[in-house]
Image (cartoon, rainbow, N blue to C red; front, side, top):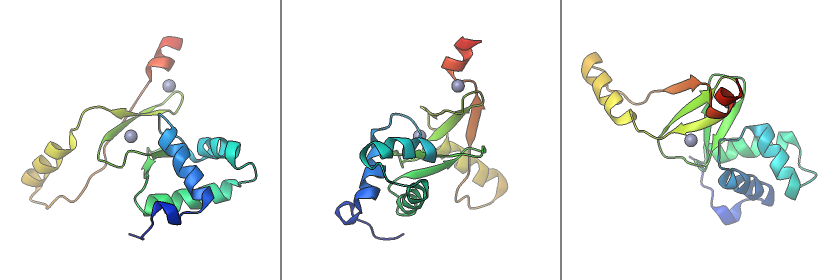
Length: 132
Ligand SMILES: [Zn+2]
Ligand SMILES: [Zn+2]
């Protein structure tokens, strides 16, 4: 993991990090780009991608691959599960931790030393459900 302290960050990176931290959900790169442009009108999408990569590698944000084409970014780097709406593509947290037991159980059954897993849910979000 690369060393990165907040005050050694470029202004661009700081703005991008703030956009993610102030966002209530799990924004995509293009949503972050749109928000970052409000403070940095000349920033390019490529710069946003590069900075997101660096922030993710340094562990300051978490990158979520939910199976779709878009990546989502999460300010909450602690372990938690996600659910993806198949209608509008929004991602929410699942406010329930199933991870600890899953790894223990799978380890016991398989004989593996379990070092990680991916678990994500799909569904229709309340907003999309009410629109039908
Ligand atoms: Zn939805
Ligand atoms: Zn999350």
